[in-house]
Length: 569
View 1 (cartoon, rainbow, N blue to C red):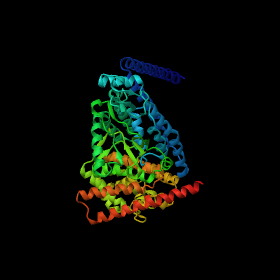
View 2 (spheres, rainbow, N blue to C red):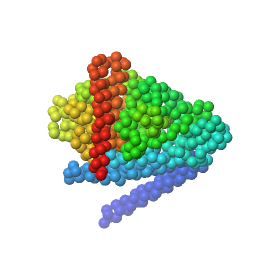
View 3 (tube, rainbow, N blue to C red):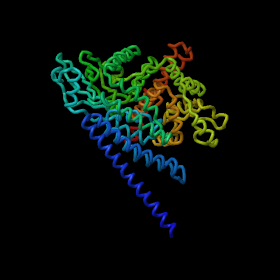
View 4 (cartoon, rainbow, N blue to C red):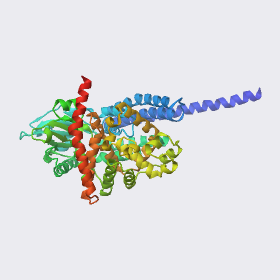
């Protein structure tokens, strides 16, 4: 009895003291939080808004992290199908939440959502489809904020500069919105106005997002997105300087002229006398967004194949031939319009030239050799090019060695035996080629069917079957994908983004992926010939690809359209 009573009397005060101190710590932390928030609100409303956005992001990140960590490490699944179904439900629940967070936070967060929404080689298709909403209209700035930007940049209100100025924006994007106006000369112009708080808050928001990603990586390495934080940190300050965009517009226009696209692809003319760091005045160009559907194009009398081919030609010229890489290639930045006298009766208009990246010649030519090897199903050439680019993944090699000989990874990578698995660079190269093409390395290096081997019709697979196969590879080798991205030179991340945009646009217009692939290969061969790397074989392959495009765009596309019409009827 003595022992029991003495021990309970000694233990209880310890618990009470612990609870008391815990309560005191909670009060101190809560009071500090409230005091900090109140002080920030009173001192700087813009940074207070950044603070609230960071908190919302942290709450959602913690919820998503706990859900996926539980399913990855603790939950037991009866079968592989059961595991896939549980993850599918997780994706369906969290993908719309992430999209809504990006939209409500605006600015930098919408830009992050747009970057991720194009990367179907990283994220499950549930996220890719949901984040596509980030390309729609973004929250606009108020009239007061627009007027403040004009006063801070030019010292005048819009009505003092323009004959007329439409207060209602034509469109609002992540970093700016566009208004229609008329100069005193009668020239109709588009006025791009940066969202007012961005210059002051973007750096703190970058730091906040970077901090959250580091915490996530420390808790669960499988979810590391270090490459995303590094890319945002480097590109955002440049994209917020509209003077650089004016210079990029002029250079892009000259690239289109040098590559035979002068009347086919339009770049708006800039009015430098009214343009500043946060204001950009350019010619107003009519057109409809490339986020349209194949039916919209067909109703306008324009073949979707022709639009996808020209879109691919513009980006291929910039990327492979000129090494001037557009860093924000999404459908909202491209318009299409009917135009009498233009090639095939239509033009594309390239908008938003805020951010480009120079591709070093060594990296550009290695990327060209990679696409050429993919075109001719040269597996050894593919791996040689990826070694030059510098990708590797130690985790992927260990994972492949641990798989049975009939595992999906070994089958996709054409390495049934341990000897065929290869080193960290070989496995990363196979995975990188699969990321570029959204096909297994086995399909990439298999020449049967030529370029048609990348098309659903040739492979006899539906869109849903493709999605399921891609989701299976992503869930099984997600860690390897992130390692490959971490080792890629930073410009290659943006090259991947451009490639994803082309492939997504082709898919939306029901155009086979072999079309943008063939266009890219033509540009690669031209770039290699200019560099003196290719001989007569390059010319022969170029004519083969041109013949393929002629047949695909002139014959197969019409047959496919007729078949869809008959099925619909």
